[in-house]
Amino acid sequence: MEEKEGDGFAMILEEEDWIRKAQQGDTNAMGQLFKHHYSFLYKYLLKITMDQNVAEDTAQDTVIRCMENLQRYNGTSSFSSWMITIATRLYIDRTRKRKREKRWLEEEHQRSVRRLRWQMERQGEEWTDLLDGLAGLSEEHRIAILLKHYYGYSYEEIGGMLGIPEGTVKSRTAYGIKQLWKELKKDGEQA
Figure 1 (tube, rainbow, N blue to C red):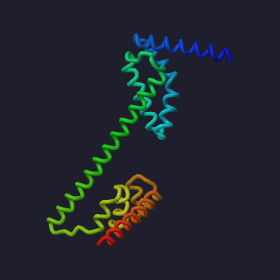
Figure 2 (tube, rainbow, N blue to C red; figure 1 turned 120 degrees about the vertical axis):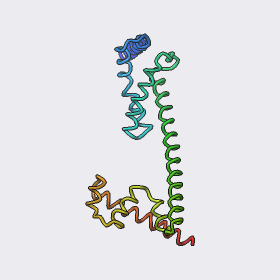
Figure 3 (cartoon, rainbow, N blue to C red; figure 1 turned 45 degrees about the horizontal axis):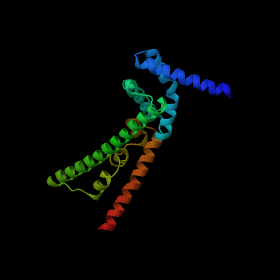
Figure 4 (tube, rainbow, N blue to C red; figure 1 turned 90 degrees about the horizontal axis):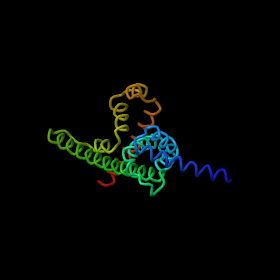
């Protein structure tokens, strides 16, 4: 038990030495410092993101941010706490940005559908409930339905065009049709 406590104390001293040297520009000490903390940081991010790719990207960006701001680390908290604070803020900022982008894209899609509808009606073409329903589907479902049921391609051909398995095309088509029927049924009940 005493050895472990002694080892922990020695580790703290070693970490403090790495921090001091890294703040003075020692790249080897900086490497050791981040190598020592990376696993802890990554595991933390994996738990909050639930996504390996996002955790990896955020961990790498956190290390870069910490390296850029290492002079600001003042030792009032543990180095690992300082790192996860930065990581958490990066993750939250990115999540907010993605939500804003998603909302903007959805609004842009709605504007685009309204413009298309207006143009078609102006040219004397009919805008049907089916087109409304298709506009409400995701791109991947709309593409699968159109290629299969409007243009008549086989599931295998569509899979080749999109670079996805035939089974994925079938499921996208089936799900899209199910959603389309729901929309058409809902619109029919409202009329």
